[in-house]
Length: 576
Image (cartoon, rainbow, N blue to C red; front, side, top):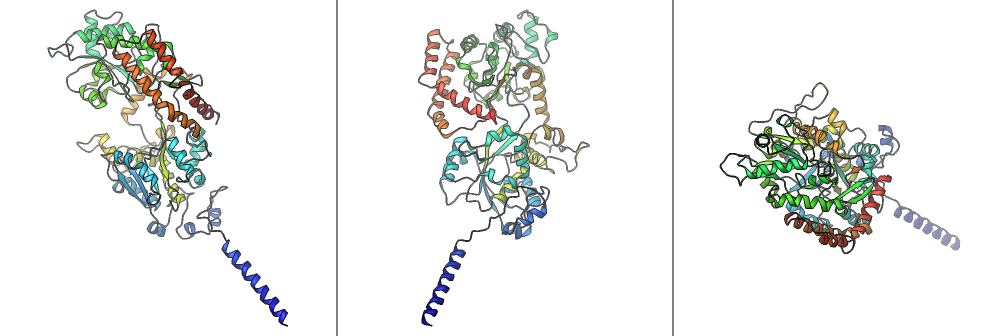
């Protein structure tokens, strides 16, 4: 009997141990299981059994319905840190943000700072694990930063939550080129949300404008060969020799009639500015140059500074600078100074910019030219690497308790109607409540004394959007000035770029490739910049100096290694 009691006691002990072990190893239920097969409400409910769905009514499949119920609206909130334009309202006070809360029941508390403050605090935020927000908007994250913080598990892998983001998921399925620009090469995941504003404008940031009255005077004086007044219309293509004759006349005469001959600026631009820069001048020699001097030609990453035509073009342009046909201030002035100098009395004979309306007081006095035809008959223009798809705009930190909810909320930004309001301002302030006969948003009359830019910057947070062909045709009209730019580009820019020439897209790099770029690319850019401005301002480049320059490109500044990094990344991009 004693042995039987001992046996029973032992059996009871074993049962207790097994029970406790089972309880201790029980896994926590997921916060909300992704719906990977169907978007039906039935299946979503069946997959719930967790607080988000059962308690807070979390749903993501119906993008016209709230994301959370009233309890969720009251008990859940997210902190989002963001820089903002100085003219903009605090995002917490913006109507578009209040409208989004009313539509989604997702409470976002914005902490706005200036762009300069963000640049100072960025590293501190990422380095302080105990005091990070849930997300950063206008994050400005580069590929290297994303790789670094992804490896440290600081960032949420957004691609793990795509099932909660029907708008964004559909976008990636329809646009594998966009997906390829977002994927982290190291682990194949996506860690940031992009801004997509495709108008076809950024590839061609320069247009050449010519003063009509000044040109007519030069024609009447017989100063320019083969040009008549009736040719002075948008789209006119001048030969380099004709442009030189015009600029010489502008330089030597009192074109604005103020009694002086030293305040006229024959040809002006803003050197190395993102728009209105010097790069189109290299098109006279068949080069599609840009600020990085890097362009894709026939699928190959090409650097224009390795081309002998770059030397010829530089010497030709330097000749115009030396002769005073190009205003030397162009190499020193800021964008603001350039724009200020264009107002009031006319001083510009010709200038590069995106639009004349921004630069001069009387834009009707200027025509837009096609690219100048060079001495050898070449006629092409700059192909800028300015992206219409900006990556790294929004990132989430791994501390975010409910990333699926915040991402479902941000997914609404990719609805084109919301995108239009994020980009330009809300319905009720910028747009009428009623749509036009095509169902498109209608812009309200501007308040007295307020410009469209001022109204937009005050009421639109900008940031993550998806505005492309569908949106422009079905949801929102391009601004009149954007339509005008596009018309001018169709006439005077796009026909003059070969189909084999393309801008370099956003590329994703491996950690090893990023190390190569980090070690060499800044030195390369500085070396090119230092030499180029010296050549342009001091009469050109000698054969000996050009030879030294090429030897250094192939040697100490490692252009070949940098070029290989870009080519390998581009080959991966085109293969997807």
